[in-house]
Length: 444
Image (tube, rainbow, N blue to C red; front, side, top):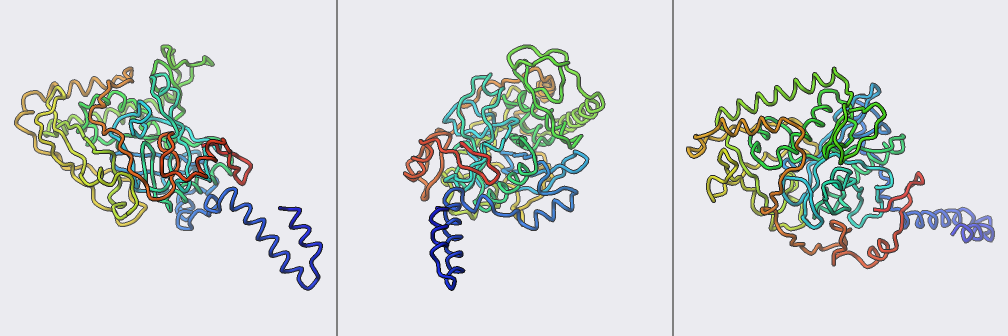
């Protein structure tokens, strides 16, 4: 292409040289557009840049992402000059699939839960889902527990079979934010994926869920970020997460018992105080009659602000709200009647507040009056973070029922779908690695 352009210029008459230059530039631009796509290089919106400046950070500063399945929200945080992270904005999620709880096997449609790492090589500017980046599932702990599956993305197109799906406009902005952070020198972005916001209200309602031991462990990492506004350092030992712990040069083994770990005692005090305060609020909610529940989805959900999106995967699964199944003190369903969960209010803008609003406690059913003390004792037992692997409760998870998508899509949970264009299938099979503008490549 370059040689052709040079020949075009050399044979052009002086009067037509300007037109030849314009044509050569257009040919080169078309080549670049084919390779990477201009959408991967769109600028961060000016209003988002203004939010960064207002909060004492810049577009090239490190970024951290937090996602919440129940609330269907994805938060973006940026590092300030002092090393602390400032909240920038929240994106309402267009689609997520599965149930609350970690991803355990390929094909279960579960969005994973845990702490994940996004590197520059996981960015994909050529995704058939508009733009995407791989979140890094499975991590070390997932693999140690035998969890399978992969190719879990944050992407556009509002179609999910285990991914965090946004609108095309949203992923364009999120992709740009991550791209500029990598351009500024960040080597890896931490993504914290949670079942819900770790509020006392959510913890009280879900206190008897079999995943709660694992969720309380995740909460420790979230608490460390909340009290310090600094990215927690993630490691693994004893088949559990450990946060900010140094082992005096000893290499930690995810399958071996944890050695004595040195942490910052000042941070430890703050985290312990927050945990104690949250546990106290949970106890108060239980005493006021908040009933433990099991929340069951037909197949994941979406933020109410995204209800207007026409093209969405499995729309029939979104037709009915998630169901709250009240539980007795032993975690058994009180009845087969499933009460519909209260739908959150629709926000007025795409960037919605991150403030967690505690719902009004529900009335205490007569059947549950026998043993709130027992359920609270069980809840407090989960304060011991040695338990990490929740017992499986996948019977309520909807079986995969992929809906044909009307336009080309990328891989869903690592499997080519019938709706993927032949050209995309050939490109993925060939193992091509799209080149980013800074020389980095993507293989996802």
